[in-house]
Length: 69
Image 1 (cartoon, helix red, strand yellow):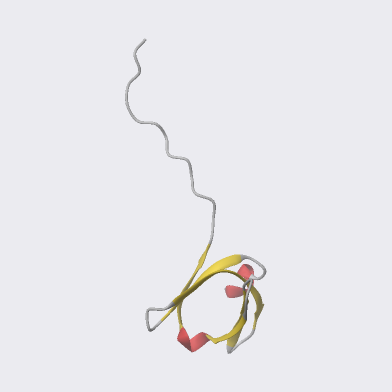
Image 2 (cartoon, rainbow, N blue to C red):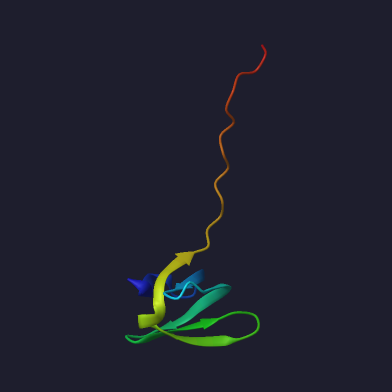
């Protein structure tokens, strides 16, 4: 399932409550993922990950209310 997120910008949330964001998933193996951002490259074991959130564009909210006609 993680293979579909390869080369996408994502945030990785850990079991201990920590988080890394602003980087991309460079490589995904059976036991770890390679996460790279502007400053560092991390090898993260899959057993330490709670979830991975893909950064997406925020959706514009529809205006609510009435206009004078």
